[in-house]
Length: 252
Ligand code: NDP
Image (cartoon, rainbow, N blue to C red):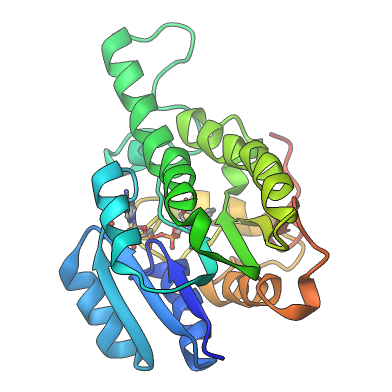
């Protein structure tokens, strides 16, 4: 039977590689994102059974509309949408956007934190809740975390760390319905919109140096693990955080 797979943020980078993997497997794939043109390009290039839905994953009404647009059951949900809003504003590296102890403005600090918590954590929470009743027995929820969670990386790291905590309760709840829930934690993936053109050569070299494989990860590294977690071979893996980071060791 054809599996239905929903991938938030599936138009670019890691999400797109995940979409390609499932589409070439014959699944009916739904990719979401905020930019229609990016989704249309991805659909045209991916081929297969791919449908696009413009949806801001942190917007309740848009997430409800996404859920309403999907007929039938969902076998696999990949909560991949996200990004570091501080980096997008040109602030912060792996560290906090603003000094945590002495911010220049509490309003600006609160706003920056809300943006990352909404994009990276609340988005996954509400998308999963909206689709929860539709998740098929034997299905899988896969949440995309980040290596930033372990590095004190401000609001972005906190959001991704929160995702790992939330996932434990989610796995417990869904386990009774024979649905797994795991977090896949990418290490440094150089070639996506997330970091491309934003970081220095020194930053890149340092991230590669801390891996055991001596290379940056690529979106396909993550897609392969996501595909495995959604396969029959992984039915007893749930509530886990799975690092895909080339064995990166850090001193924090
Ligand atoms: P990309 O920027 O290429 O992918 C992020 C995707 O999410 C984009 O397609 C973007 O599309 C979409 N997106 C962002 N915010 C929203 C939103 N609110 N609603 C819907 N879609 C959204 O980067 P990556 O592929 O690298 O990132 C994918 C995931 O991997 C992210 O969750 C990121 O935090 C995580 N990650 C990445 C790492 C890396 O090194 N690159 C390392 C660790 C984790 P649009 O802007 O059109 O909405």
